Length: 334
Ligand code: AMP
Image (tube, rainbow, N blue to C red; front, side, top):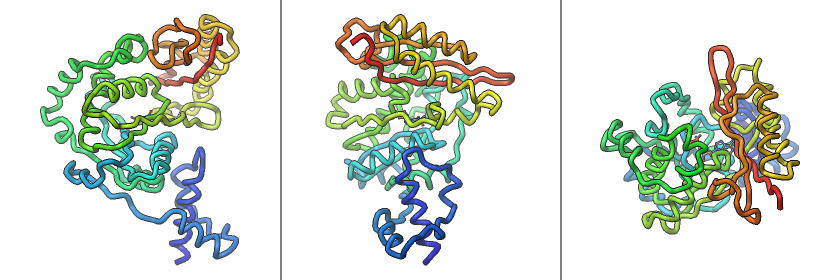
């Protein structure tokens, strides 16, 4: 019984953490921190211990239609878990999907090397409040086969915000076709009432909003944004951060520092220049560092509309490179 209570307490603690502990912390028993038996009873009531249901056959999703959906590619970190917790707060059943989507990777990108710690992910998703974890097979999402689905993604009509801003769409022209295709197919299978997407991928969030709003199949699905979860030093959490060698880790905070620098600028041009200078100072190779209209992602024309600083930069080191993204609302010149 004591073990059961300690495990439940550990989960409750993790559930409450804003930036959360590492995976190892969930196994650390806090029995010694119990102040009274009442504390244990309250925690049991707060978060019942149930493993998430694992779904591989899309037909089994019928029972969960109308729930709140969190699509991911796995290798879950606190950023993903914050979205699952937000979904759980909606009061609906929470379905998290884990699928490394081949149609959004270019041939030179890291599809095969993308981490796939599935057992760990299932455990973490359940602890964060996911009722079900959907692990679709590639053939259920892409019955036409990999090559044909990649061709289809490349020819799919996608929203303007996926192809005009010349941000992610410029460097990764295949990307939003693949994202739109997989999200559309997942939404068709899961049929949620709401879906949660992270602000970390700001352009992607705008693309999904536009796709859902313009497609009759998805009317009524609420797109819920989840704030960016950061490491202690400000680096936005990402599955790819693990590839940054510790000797170069300090440089990675250059993106958050660049956003700080943009905050105090008086015009979009000054903000962009300040971001560039900061990225250079951290030896980060800038892809873009811009101030844009938050929704259309086009250059700022109407200063009364919300504006956003958006950055992509690579941290290059001997033997490798990690591409980093970040963004922040910056109400410039208003
Ligand atoms: P991914 O597994 O990279 O496809 O991401 C799945 C979802 O998690 C997307 O909606 C991302 O925007 C979101 N996400 C990734 N990193 C973070 C983060 N640091 N904070 C908040 N959301 C995130």
